[in-house]
Amino acid sequence: MKRERLIQIVLVIVGLLNVAQIYFLYMDLWHSSWLLEQKNETHPMFLSFFIPVGVFLLIAARKPSEYRSAIALAAWWHISHGAVMAIQTVEAWIHGVHRNFADVILFLAIGVVLLALLPGKREVVAPAVA
Amino acid sequence: MKRERALQVVLVLVGLFYCFWGYLLFDDLWHSRWLSGHSDVMPMFLSLNTALGVCLLVAVNQPAKHRLMIAYGAWSSLAHGFTMTIMSAQAVAHGMHRKDSPQDIVIFGVIGVTLLALFPAKQASPAVRPERIVRQAEAGTTSS
Image (cartoon, rainbow over the protein chains, first blue to last red):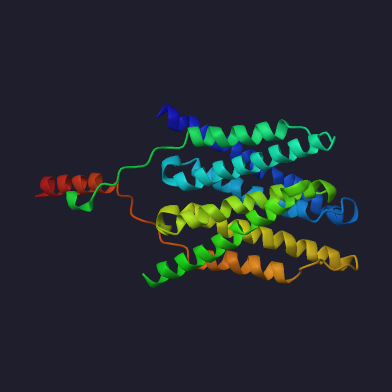
């Protein structure tokens, strides 16, 4: 019960963090800033992925044991994101470019915590019990 | 049954399509190409869909057990397509043309709509069933 409450809290926090990216997406699209100032068309698309993840994590927070696979997806999603940023950080350092690694730690920590708190598989009871 | 098979076929195709992005990711990270292209977002962007592709392939065996994951695959594709639609409209408004538009919008829109159209029905929760049966049996004995 305590573990379930804990994962619910984590899911709500991570879900809200992901949903909050909508603000940055809005700022990117507002006045076509991605086109005229940043000249980076990947950034808005990249941000658009966070919003559904956030919404689905908030849905999963109601009954985490029913949404194991969605939570696992979010966990591996954050871990793959963190791993790619870790490689990028190392490559940047090798080429003498500084890249802050705080985001690597944040995303890896979120992924590991979600995996650690992943609810156990529910036992399937055969309908023949009746 | 036919619908479930159709969903499984779609999940394999979409899963493989997104897994292919893993190759693009490798290509971007290989020899630090992302660094020379000055786009540090691109590899991260590719990593998200690669992970989604693997998870969709995991869901192929028992789609009904992975409903929320499939829903996520559908809605993230739609969100991606919707964002690209806004971007394409903005590019046109500024007298420019977005590369790959509108094919990319159509592809992601079709993926999202197809996954939602074939979305599996909710399974009856097996853990709850015996309890319900016991309650019904108790109600039956008290009423008789």
